[in-house]
Image (cartoon, rainbow, N blue to C red):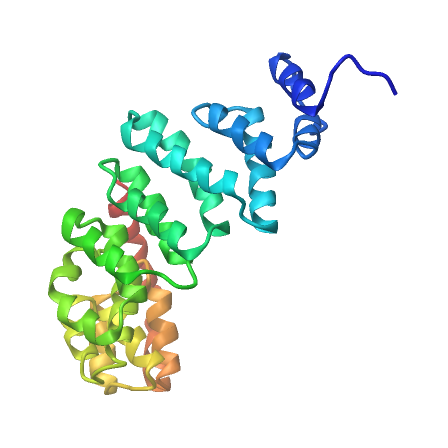
Length: 281
């Protein structure tokens, strides 16, 4: 079949210049015909743009790297990392998108370079990409996360430390991490991790968040007296996590407290609704 193009690269460039919507995925199909070195080279030139061509090339390069990382992929990563360091905020984010997609395919040492470059960035959006990459890594480098926490104190970094640090290290950092854990589910995870080290740790949580306290106790197979549970019910009637509290009380086997909740359900529901309305106002 005769064509007017000498090779897939020429055809791809022609398609990219056409101002048409590629509904059938022609760009992606032609990109798959490129040699790995051509795809990597062309992606480097296109990586600062948000375009269908960039996306098609990136998918091709990722597929090639998944089949086996080649010299041109290492070169591409080095070039993109240098570009990210010197680019402005918007361009850095666009470049980081390609690096984020490539990172999981790379050897551990090269993954670490990308992750470290991201979490050291002055742009918080790129640092968040770095935290996500580290969180998904099967062999995360904890020293990178700790260093990023010391430098930036990002809440996303605090949460990553809660998930990944050994319990003993987490206990030593608890006081500095707590202010950044502003959601009940974050506190719950922290104290469940700390309980691996000391079963009495959850008692401190009662002063911080009584709903999370009951949840953690329930997950640990511990319980509290009915009177204490009922007091927490009174305090938490307007909490949007009231259903989680009810679950926790059931998990602890406090059926008499559940009976009391059922008997006062209209009142408790009214208080909960009033609290939600006040929150939305």
